[in-house]
Figure (spheres, rainbow, N blue to C red):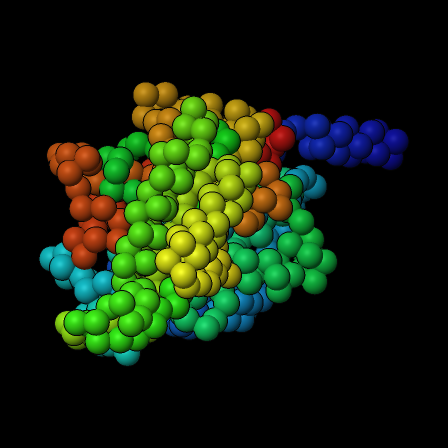
Length: 431
Ligand SMILES: [Zn+2]
Ligand SMILES: [Zn+2]
């Protein structure tokens, strides 16, 4: 009798062990909560490195779910660690928390009325990039996975990151700072096997997802050029060196980098001068000019080539005019966002099965940048876009992310979460 009992127990144990863990499903009511959280976050947006209210809300939620929580990483970053009931892989999921200095013009009851000081001016603050939805969706996924942790194979790290849009001047922040503070080190839970994230976009309608294997979003670097001139009366230019003319020649010369120096059969690059500051009045040739610009690229070697060309041309043009120019590459640039080809090949069919094959769009290269790139440089990464433009509107004409009119159809959030949950289930099951 006792032997039989032992036999039954061990058979049951073997059965339990060999039986694949049930796929985790979203409990009823989570989608509604996510919409509620998103509206609260939307009405209370915070700029990068200042997301203290958002972070407190996230931390309280993760704690209530019984997770190990760490706060104050990279200023306001929060992480939660969920241990599954069964052994398996270690996956990181990331959401960014910061808003933008944009004055909201969308007519919704929870529109932001928040203002703040930014670079010496009073500006509106708005979740114009949709990071409010990212936070709410990841809170919803945290609740979903925590509710069924016994059947979760492996462990999940929830990353709520500050300052994706860049840290305030003179500060560090974002993914780079979280990693520098040991996010993927033994200080916390070590390196995950993979990292995943999503971003809402007006460029796709609700129900659609977008991704691309390999490089998907550009690297982004800021550069400045200081042109040294010699101040003189505007009526007697021969007695000075005009930095406005030299600066203008530099701007024109930079236009030839992409058109004449870069192999255009490869990936594209962009060089833009977005700011040109010099002078005070019409009849004084100033003593200096300052240019500020951005570089976008999809290839690390090409990026280096463009940077070197800008410096060479700036200095060369200045030398030809008998003066000097100082070139500076600013710290805090973003790397190319690369979707790991193997992980993408594995999970794209899962996304397709969730929303329909025709509704997973292969994105063209995007010259925008994302600091998710830094996590995906450390471990295999998957980053995809979630459509949030109402289906009765033309996504191509919809106000883009960062616009004061950026509008999120909240139905898109449920689609994003369903897709991520399916990807998590598949990844954790080792499929
Ligand atoms: Zn943005
Ligand atoms: Zn964004």
